Length: 316
Image 1 (cartoon, helix red, strand yellow):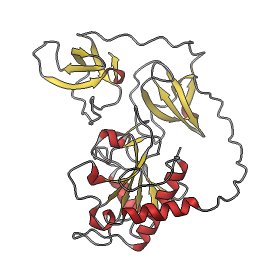
Image 2: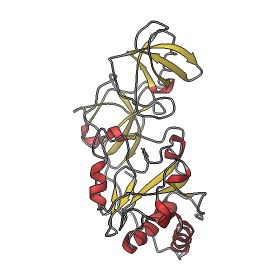
Image 3: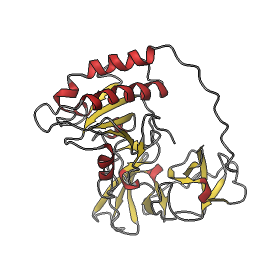
């Protein structure tokens, strides 16, 4: 797991509200939001536990300055209303201390925001923060007033104060305690004992085994087809069982053809917009590079369901 040590509580978002991993992306910036209400960090997180919310954030800061984590930084939170921004951002929701107007925040919330921004930037190697570059805000990517004039007018101040924190002389780094071995290694072929993810959300089995692509403590990221394949889920290593020796190298996935029956691995379309499953399978009616158009039946003039990246499809 990767999140700030400044977070004192964890309120995990429902797995329907974010994407495992950062597809074709990496962390290059921090994006600031406001909650458009007076909330605690815990209450904001509870909103993202609704499986039908279709939104989330990596962090939230309450009215009293308490920091909560909702989505681990290595995963893609759905916060910025813009897929390209989401895959590159660590996002922070901030409680307001009053509603309407400039949407102000309390001093405690603002102070925690500065410290959290500094910590995220330091751990992810973002370098010197510059407002509008690697320190951004929601209305840069969507037609919204978020995060309100109060925070937007203080973005340069946030960058300067966070940079000042990170420019202080580093303290001696304590020797880390060795992490106990889980008995699993990257590349192992595994299956789940119980079909739930790391947070306990029920899963649907899509194949006989998966590959471990990352291990962090008791958290393993599982992929389909190979260690570089599409992310299936994050799972607790205590819930894993090895499946013999993984073939090396992993066989290349079958090329898709028009007429194939398929399902998305992650329920998002080609641009990253969340999808709702409406049937047990769909038919590929068009292929153009890695873009496949899915229809609800095998007729070429049938209703179109969505366009999906072929890396995010599996045969049924």
